Figure (cartoon, rainbow, N blue to C red):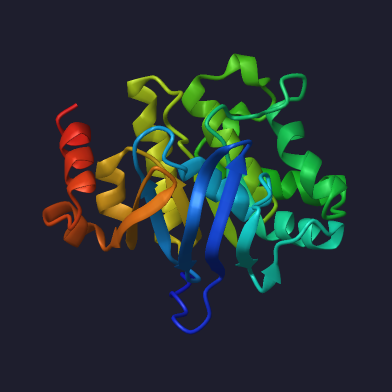
Length: 252
């Protein structure tokens, strides 16, 4: 059943979040809310802080100041909070991050068995459910090297789904793919969005953003410059920086 955004309490809340890499400030007092069932697309030029923002949400990067609350959990370095966050938040990376020495089935069942305590039979049943959902159940016994880039990314999405997270983060999931493989991954993501999954997607795929997003976020130089519904920001961007970025992307 599709979830509807709960406007009362955000499932993700970031308040005045800053992140440094040495002297370089990657995030500058970033504040944003994401509600249950909401689909948020983050765009912006290279180095604008997009990937850093979502990596802070699942604590792959630790922020220096500000507050991040995810699914009721305040992010700290405490191991218990990290474990809860990783259980609530799934992530799909640009480079797939599959284990090359494991089959597709083994990649998908490892987390549910080791982290969630599922039996081998339960984990395999769940893996097949999600491989069906991403439309590659016939690839179950293959190794990642035997798959196309698009198939590998769909396996990576299925692997995240096998942990049954409440939130899915996508870090430029199509940028490493050949053009003909992009559509098959975007189709899977569109289906996930229609099912009500809470999603934050860093991408330059503006067609996907316009079709799927409830909210567009434009970042530049570590700051959130503009936020709004796709129809609004595409037709009448408020900032010159966003207007210039859109012109460059759409004319590319």
